[in-house]
Amino acid sequence: MDGPLDISDRRSAIEDFCRQIEVYLCRKNDGHLIRVVGPSFDLVSGWAEQGVPLKVAYTGIDRYFERYYRKGPRRRPVKIDFCEADVLDVFDEWRKAIGVVIHSSVGSLQSSAGRHPSSVGSRQSLPAHLERVVLRLTSARARGSLGEAFDALIDRVCGELDAARAKAGGLRGSARQALVERLSTLDAELLRQARAALDESVRASIEREALDELAGFRSGMTTEAFARARDAVVDRLVRTHFGLPTISFG
Image (cartoon, rainbow, N blue to C red; front, top):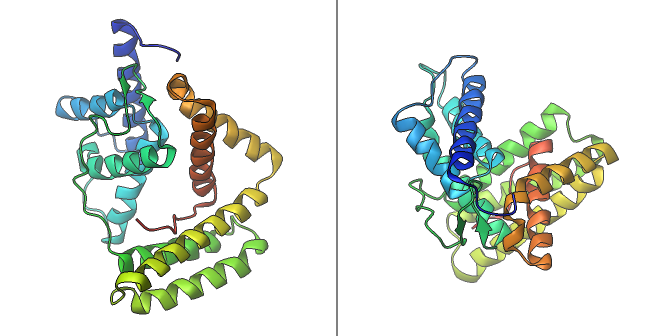
């Protein structure tokens, strides 16, 4: 969208956002319907007001469910309220990745240092981050979505990460910074190979999706800023396509 929405369009956009979140939550809850109404509607409406893209909200919901499943068999369906910290964490990561002034998805203008509330979730420790990355890489390989070309790379990355896990908790100063920089290098290498592995139809679909995700924000960006934002969104979508973790830390 190129400019602010009028009141009726704005309300319609918020309601549609909430409906789609409700549908996604129902699917994640194995078909059990948990309505997004009352305080939950206010909560999710707030995400729309802040400009949280749907796919970003979905990723936050996925993150909560991933942690929930690790705790053992589920006892009851998940309410959307439980996912708030993860959704806001992912949105914060998304905003930092694109690093630009953005229009919210319902038409108000705000900067990346705007009125987004701080996350209520605690940041992972480096050892916990490394453990999570290794688990997700192993899971992605087991699904067979990456192909044999990734096997050697994943083996090498997992080997480095396993070695790092043994000492990460005791690293300080320059040694810790060197490890963090190495994680960024490994992350970039993994993404380069993942992009190269995309077939043309999937690549085109991901690029279209990235443009759609940023369409409402484009008017607030320079050409260079938009190109950086598009690349950042494409990287996130490539990760999602292959089920890859973010190796970088911090």
